[in-house]
Length: 340
Image 1 (cartoon, one colour):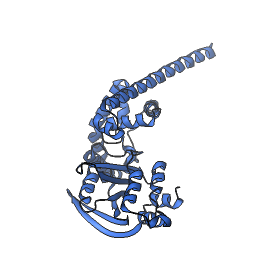
Image 2 (cartoon, one colour; image 1 turned 30 degrees about the horizontal axis):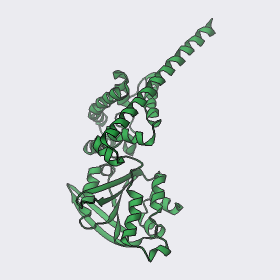
Image 3 (cartoon, rainbow, N blue to C red; image 1 turned 120 degrees about the vertical axis):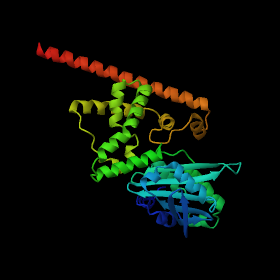
Image 4 (cartoon, rainbow, N blue to C red; image 1 turned 60 degrees about the vertical axis):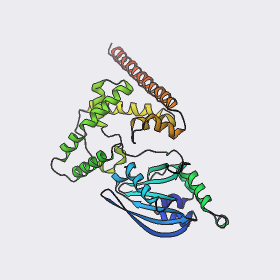
């Protein structure tokens, strides 16, 4: 059962209160400081249960979107604290990444799990799993490290509900800095931002052309308005105003963009996730082998699912075009009849 306090604490980043008062973990205070490249990372331990410790780490939003950086932090921390959970969080926007890792049977490889989400909208399945980390007073006496690890594995060793990592972290960081400069009204910032993203717009147009069979010119126009598919991850980009286009052109581009999104939304959850992971839509692009490992399937099976998914999207978009053409003809006929 999800308690209201657990959800509110999660949304407001009151992690210590959530673990101790709501989940029944024990108080533990310590600080771990790490140097990762040119970044100084500070992790604060807020709770523990029989040796399994919970660390919190406040990062900039661009660092939070860098999966590689988070794994470097985890790899250093695991040398000192073998069993742990790390909750990364940012203040603008309010966002979190819950990270857990476990050594594989060979003792060398580590399996990572990262669960990113906007703090205002924690995924319901994740809330339900986190509530199972709770230890009641009756369970406290028999609690062990093994039982704490088992509950943690059930909560976090699953495929994440969302993917919010940048495919090219350094690119995303530079993009964010340019967006901040635009918001500050820095002279020439808008031109630098557009120039910096032009190549990405061209690449996006080629992807739309190859995936969905959209006309190349139309695809490039969509890509220009749709330049960064991860824009929703960055509050700093939401206030950007694009160059004004004629009203009819803006309407057509919005309709085309919405058609693509609607087509993806018609897929089942696994098909959507595989498409996102294979092409790096809102997350890091992954190979067939990497995706196969996530779902416990073969490389060939993932390729088959991907191929079938792309065919579904092409059929949906072609049917949509046919319906629009039929509607346009009907409107012309009705207009002609009305004028007779």
